[in-house]
Amino acid sequence: MEKVESGSVENGTLADFQIPAKKLNVVFVLGGPGSGKGTQCTKIVEAFGFVHLSAGDLLRAEAKSGSESGIMIDNMMKEGKIVPAEVTVKLLEKAMKKSNNDKFLIDGFPRSLDNRELFDSVTGIEPRFILFFDCPKEEMERRLLGRNQGRDDDNEDTIRKRFKTFIETSLPVVKFYEEFDKVHKIDATRTVDEVFSSIEPLFQEFKRTGSELQEELVQAILPYLSCRLGALVHTPFGFDK
Ligand SMILES: Nc1ncnc2c1ncn2[C@@H]1O[C@H](COP(=O)(O)OP(=O)(O)OP(=O)(O)O)[C@@H](O)[C@H]1O
Ligand SMILES: Nc1ccn([C@H]2C[C@H](O)[C@@H](COP(=O)(O)O)O2)c(=O)n1
Image 1 (cartoon, helix red, strand yellow):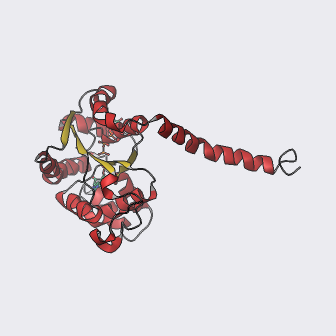
Image 2 (tube, protein in one colour):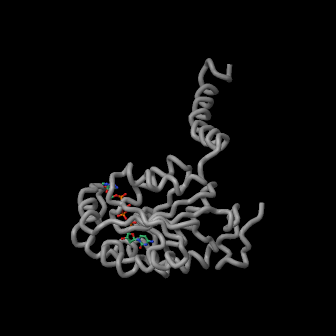
C-alpha cells in the first residue's frame, strides 16, 4: 500500500502511517465550549464508524500521565488557554497512527490558526469538511454548569476565560475554512436528536457497507471468543482431555 512520503513530513513522524494522507477522511468538529460537539461525535461514531479523537480528552489524559508537559497542560487548561500546537498535534498524530481506521472525527481541533497550520504541515491531511456547532453563550454556559463530569474547567471563572479564547482564537479558524466553503454551520440550540438529524445527511457518503459491519462485529466478539477458548483449554472437559 502507498504510504505518506516521509519527505513531506517534519521529523518523518508520519512515515509509518499505513494509509496515505489523501485517503484519510478527516472531519474537524468545532464550536464553543458546551455547544454539544462530544455528544454529537458519539452519535456519528455509532452511525458511521468514525474514530472520535477529542483533542481535549487527549490533553487531559496527557496531563494526568505525569509526563514532562503534564503540569503545563493542566495549568493552561485551567486558564482556558490553548496548549501549544506542537503538543496537541503530536498527541493527535499518535492516536491516528494507533488506529486502523481511515475515518476520523477530530473534536475541538484546530482551536487556533497555529493548530491548523502545524497539523497541515505535519500530516498533509486536508479535512473533508468542518462541522461548526453554533450556540449562544448563555445556552453553552447552562450546559457546562450542568455537565457534572468532574472537569476542573467547568467552573464559572474558567468558563468565562474559555469563551474569550473561543471568540479571539478559535473563531478565526472557522472564518479561515469558510473562505474555502468547507464549513457546515449547525444550529446547536435544538435537542440532541434534532441536531443529529440535521448533520446525518452530511455523512451519507460514509455509510458502512454490509461487509464493514460484519468485520466490526467479528472484531467486537473476538476478545470474548478467545477468552472462552482459553477457558476451555484449561478445564478438565476442555481441549486438554
Ligand atoms: N442539544 C443539546 N441540548 C441540551 N443539552 C445538550 C445538548 N448537547 C449536549 N448537551 C449537554 O451539554 C453538555 C455539554 O455537551 P458536550 O460535552 O457534548 O459539549 P462539548 O461541545 O463537547 O463541550 P467541550 O468543548 O467543553 O468539551 C453535556 O452535559 C451534554 O449532555
Ligand atoms: N486543540 C485544543 C483543544 C483543547 N485545548 C484545551 C483548551 C480547552 O479549554 C481544553 C478543553 O477542551 P475541550 O474538551 O473543551 O474540547 O483543552 C487546547 O489547548 N487545544
